[in-house]
Amino acid sequence: MSPNVATEVGNKMGVVEDVEQRRRIDDQKFFLRVRVALPISKPLWRGSFLLGSDGKRHWVKYKYERMPIFCHYCGVLGHDFRHCSTHFAASKKATPLNYQYGD
Image 1 (cartoon, rainbow, N blue to C red):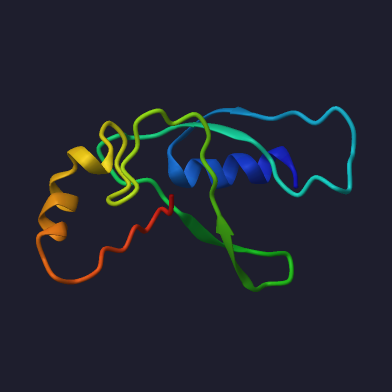
Image 2 (cartoon, rainbow, N blue to C red; image 1 turned 135 degrees about the vertical axis):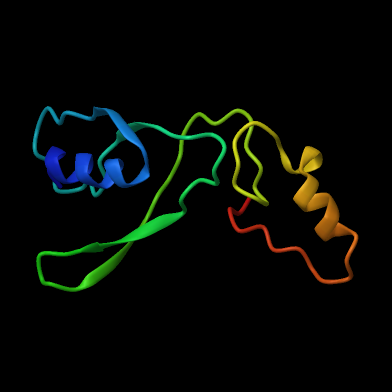
């Protein structure tokens, strides 16, 4: 839970612009807020594996804030699922749709 680790994780996604600075040590806070510049032409990462201090790989789930236009089907910024060509093509098939990014 250090700013150096948060910067390293953010660099996997894009270019780190800012890392939250803690004012005090708090045992209840299990996250760090990182501002990252993302390429909008690619889908957002839902998470990644990180190597822990115990030597094991751990899945880290990413959470995003302040995304006004986001497609929950394909994961690309700039349109919603109602204007997504991939969603439209998949909805014409008889198989159920899988929204990878949730609601």
